[in-house]
Structure formats: structure tokens, C-alpha cells
Image (cartoon, rainbow, N blue to C red):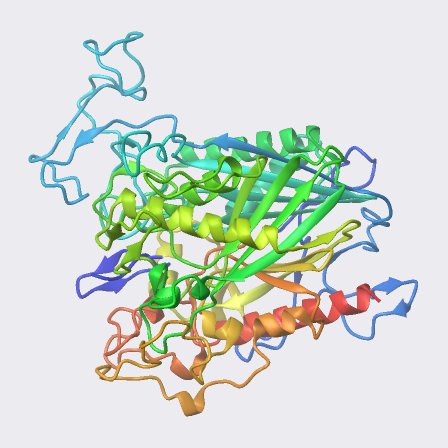
Length: 620
């Protein structure tokens, strides 16, 4: 994410673009068992060296007692008895809801720079509905109309004071592709036996764990029996500021509590609707393709760029399609790792960026001016951002689409081209994928304490710019976060509470993950290059998630249930000597200013290993 900056390009938190909770409580669900929606307590953890530990207690299955400490939530078999068995058919339901802010006023960006300049730019004092008396369909004055106050809804990403002017739609971007764009929330519910899992994805820049906990509480208050909820922000830089970093100025939050209530209520509504839509899954098709194999000249560089040395990318586009007994698509899960920021900082229209065209391609098919399009598979497409940190971006990428058109500057034409290209790759992944007729569902989660070294974060927490409670972690200031692991047949998904640099997921320090002909592993002009001889050795995270099973497909759910900024390998975590976390060090070290600290990668690794180890034991 591109963070908001102090005077000398100092980001106060969570990444933006560069270039130029888990507490469930009592209550009773529909089965009569206590309901939860995630971890229920905080287990001890070493927050400096990354040693993991779970909650106290003993896990048991038919195979006996777990030799270590089990996670605080695991299904099947959790001691709370909320999820004793995953026997029986898998059920799935999915739905989509708009989360375009209900109240904001529009304006005219006279300078075309994406920033509202008071006294220079004009705003329309028309109230929440943005309709003035001269507009067709004017229903009469509404809240805020004519009050002389500009009601702004801030876009999350890049700089401060970037209010939205409206919603991107048909007529903007490639012909026929823009229709239906905007800001949406998608919910998927999976149920098997006593287990129920809900995944909510939102077209926003990031969602903190306290908001996740509020959704969990609301689900419980609604009487919904959800054992584990994962809320994933796709990290959209053309969507609402749901974190607070991109308000009118450096020290004023851009988080709107009323909008927070709106999207959380919509999340509950969407999960409810997905539960109502539950139906048997006849089969799951699971596959992936290598994006670098589609362009022999540019490789992955036709769709993706790494803006931080070393150049390491995860080139895989993943897709998992669930169909019902009639062969109709219920939901297609999609995995790719690249910042949704193609329209860049001068855009002021709500949009899902390239992900709109990607999802549209899966659901409805692709559409080109001269080249043949592909047919979609119907159903609901749900996008999951992978290891996109450090910096997986389309900014600066020269994209050539099947029509032969090339786009490099930020635009919706470029976003639509990119999204449809990746969407067609995902359809290829399904065409070549493995069909699994009886996928089995398992999941587990663990919350943990985490020391926060970044003084900018602490300042923002203490002053209400970011919504976070500070706790004492072994004498240091810190917070509580969480991770989860979900098995769906051979698909294993691990949530990570931030933007993981891809080298932590795939390695590639030897140049094996460049996937772009002619691109150097390290820019020879870098004045402060990474010391690759000190880089960590494998197996790397995605290898460990697969746990030695060549038939298993590992995915990262980045920004899962939290957004704590960039997760950077400790060997290359370099801070400015004079004002660390305020001024970035020479070379490619912007991400450090938006990171919890150098220990974060170790903590994530350790917590992941603990979940993976238990998952292997639980599966027998």
C-alpha cells in the first residue's frame, strides 16, 4: 500500500503505491452450539524471534493427543464442540453486494491531480445523493445539501486528500468492459458437517482486525453459526480509505465511522445471503498457470513489475471453481499477486481497478475490439491477493493486449487490458485443472501478540488516526493480530496479516524467480543493494504450506483479517540511520517505513509453521 507521508517522503503506515479479530464470544448458533467466528483468546508468542505458540490445551483426534500446543480454534475437533465433524457433502454459497459509500459529495478536479485544493477546485454541495435541484430525478434536499460543507469520501492509497468524484462505469476504459465496476463486497460460505467457514472479500485498501472483530460480533448477534470468518481486503487503491491513512491531511484520519458501519452491515447481509444460497458441491476444479509463459519476449513483465530489489515474483495465476449438481458455477476463487493500483493516484472514481475486469472475465467472459474473447463460467468470482508486497505492481508496466494495443501510462484502458489478460489465464488454469469430486474442509486459527517497533504506527494508534488498542508485549508496545489456515481438498490457504514480500513465499534469491527475460536480479545502479549472500535459505513459505505434498496447491491470502504493512526479509530490512521509520534508507527501502519491524517476517514464519504442523497432524 502506498502510505501517507511525512515531510521527507516518510510513510506513516501501510503501503500504498510507489513509482513515479478474532474474538468471538458466547452466543448460540443455529445448531445450538456456542458460535464463534475466529480465535477466542490470545496465545503466547515470541514476538521478536518469531517462535510460535498456540493457546493452552490439548488437541485430540482419533489419532490421539497432539504432541505440541494446538491452535486456539480448529475444526473439526475443537474442544468447544462447535465443529465436531466434517463428514458429509460440501455445501457452498456465494453472493456479491455493492459497498459504494452511501453518503458523499462530488467535486471537479480542475488540476487533474487527484487532490482537492480548497479555493481552487469546485465541489457540488448537493448532499449525500449528489443530486442538485437542476438534476434529473432530483428528489428534494437531503443530508448535507446546501450546508456549505464538503462531505468527502477519501480514496485509500497514494496521497492525502483524494476524495472520490463518482463511480467508474461504462464509457470509461475499454469499450464494453467498464459496466458494473465500482466497489463491491463478496462473501463465500463453505459448510461441511458441523463446519462452517465464511470468506468475505472487500474492494478496499485494507481492514484492521478490530473491524473484523466487529463483523464477527454482528454475525453472532444475528444468530449466524459461523465457526471461522476471514475478511480479506484486496488492497484496492481506487477504493475507500477503510484504515484512516489517507484523510485530508497528515494528522487527520480518513476513516469514516458511518462508512465502517455500512460495509460491516453489508458483510453480515452478504454472509447471510450466502448461507441462504448454500447448495451441494458436485466437484471442484483446481489449477494454475505461469503468467510468464504467455509472452516470450517480456515474460511476466507484460503484466507485472517488481519495484524493489531483488526482482522476485510469484508468476502463478490460480483458480478454484466449485460447481453444483447441475454443473453450474457456484463460485470461482482466484489468486494473483499484484497491487490493484493501475489507475494510479490521479484517478478519483471508485473502481476495483484491474480486478473488476479480471472477475468480469471469469463471470461473463472477455471482450476485445478485434481479438476473439473468451466465454466466462458464470457464478460469482472472488479475487484473493497473494504475496504482493515489495512491490508487486502494474505501475510502469507496458501492457500489450490481444488487440495489439499497448498501454504504459496509468489508465482504465490499461487496467481493463491487464484484468482481462489475467482473467483469460485463470480460465486456462481451469481448463487444465484437476477435478476433485469430494473436497474436504478443515480450518484453524490463532491470534497472537506482536511487538510494534515502528514509531509512526504507535503514534497513529495513540492519537486515533488508526483504530488500534496498544497492549504491553514483554515490556514493549504492541498489538494483537492473527493468522489462519484453511484446507479445501488439495487447496491450502494461509492468511497473512499484511503485504508479504514474494521472496519470503517463493525464494528466488538465486535468480530463479525473475520470470522476465533481460531483467537483472538486482539493479546495477542500486546504491544500497541487498546482500543476497545473507538471504534466508529454503524451504520458503509456499513450499512449507504445501508440506511436501506435490498434489497440494498452496495459496497466500494477503491482508487476511488484518493489514500491518509490509512483511520484509530481516536480512534486507534497512532503516535510515538518523530518523528510522520516518525517512527511508538509500536504495529500495520504502517498505520499511510501512512495516511493523524487522521481526515481523520471523513471527509470520513461526506462526505459519505452527498452523501447518497442526494441520498435517489433524489431517492424519
